[in-house]
Length: 423
Image 1 (cartoon, rainbow, N blue to C red):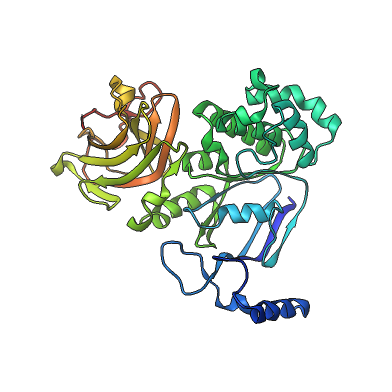
Image 2: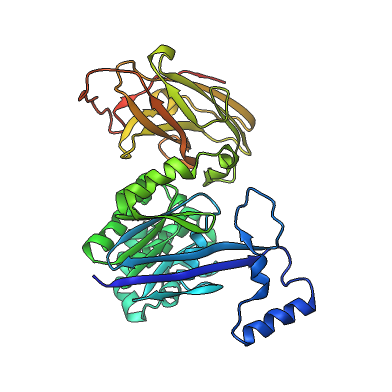
């Protein structure tokens, strides 16, 4: 199998603050070094891109000495916390920006979807933007015309296809943009976190399409997402980034496990790991058993339960439900907690809100390790915000005999957890 992407000693440095070094003499020094093919002297003082600490230099390395190969037909999940360098890497691979040092060799045509509405003109209609965006991505007019009906059908926005896209919601934007990129006759498909904007039905549809182009058509897929379940379902390989460096490169399952164990365990970046799909919601604090520590050990002596407290603010009245999905180390859904899903309990109050939930597991659960993914949703409609691996739980009780399997209920998990909420 041939190599589709080869990355060697790739680095990308950014200047913080105002452009330039601050003095004409230093700017000339950098220019003269570049003319002679020498290393930029200003980059010697660059620092690792750790956004949680205040540095001494105005130059940060968004990526530093990245090396990896991607084989044709691989589906590769690129994961890491916010600021790890994932989007910068994809922009370099898509040739949106150039690397500071190192090289990237790509074999084949690339279709990329990096931001909502990339390549769209707000004054043009959806139909006109399909032709415009397709041309930007390298499609010929005849090719676009041949696939036009298929693109519109996949996007699900046929009713609005003759409406200027400035009147589209962000979800409609990304539907149309992904439909164009996915139907381009390319060898490599690159997708950033934009799918989080879409609803659950469209996300499932997109993942299915990416799986088809990878496994069925032999295309190479690079997928960045904080939805680790989606990453592991789609991808066979995984690359874990941390502070601009590759900390793991191997199987997707092992990459996700390394991320869960090492990449998200510090309290400092807990709130930063929340991904928002709505500007009307802001999570200000989350506590587990009155602590910000996101590791809990539970056993039969403390009734296998814990309390979660959430402080948030709503800018407008809107239905709000909290969902907790508990997954084992193989990303199988073990349990599901959602007051709105169970009995229609939702919050709809504008302003500062404090919620408290007690989550209790059955005593007959086997010894198990789980990660909790936390979602703030409009019940069964839309995800406003999410935090993957919000809490790690180690249950040390004995439970039932090994091999017992709980029955699935309504397809959402092996166990429905009791609802106990106070506000």
